[in-house]
Image 1 (tube, rainbow, N blue to C red):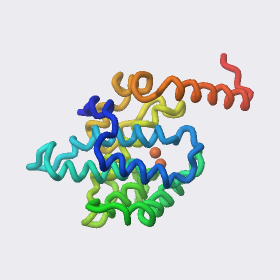
Image 2: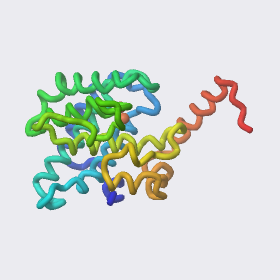
Image 3: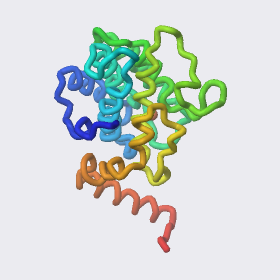
Length: 224
Ligand SMILES: [Fe+2]
Ligand SMILES: [Fe+2]
C-alpha cells in the first residue's frame, strides 16, 4: 500500500534537508520545466511511500533495515536527475552524468550511506531496456552481490509514477513497475488526484498551462 500521509509530509528529517541542500546545489540546469526541482521532490515523496513495502522476510516495516533503506533510496531520489541538461530524451546520458556527479561531489560528504547501491540506482533509472533487451525492471538486472536492488526498485517506480505529469503518459504501464504497491497505486484516483490537489501549486499549474499553450502555438496546433 502507498501511504498517502507520506506523500503529504514535508521533508522534516535532518538527513532529508541535508541531502536536498547538497543535491539542489549540484543541479546542472535549474531552468528545466518537466524535470524541475518539483519533479525531484515528488520522486522523493513517492520513494518514502514505497520503501515500507520493501521489507525483507522476517523484517518489520519499522526495522533498522527499512530506515537505512529509506535514507539510501531518498538519496537516490534527490540525486537521480542532477545531471539532466535538457528536458527532452537524452538517451540516458543524464543518468550516467548524475551518477558521476553524485560519486564525485556528493558521496564524499555523506557518511553512513550505501553509496554503491545509490549509484547503481541512479545509473540505471532511465533505461529503456534492461542489459539483455527486456523491460527495464530490476528482476531483469544482475547487480553485484553488494548492491541492495531495492534502492533501484524504489527510485525507478517513484520516477515512473511521476510520468503522469506529462501529456505523453496519461497512463503508467504496470509492467514497467517493480513493486506491487506502485502497480496498484499507478493510475488510481488517489494517484491522479495528487496532481490536482497536493503537489502542484497554482503558480506551477499556471506556468505549466502557459507553456503548453506556447508550445502548441509554436507548432501551429489548433484544438478541435
Ligand atoms: Fe531521470
Ligand atoms: Fe526523474
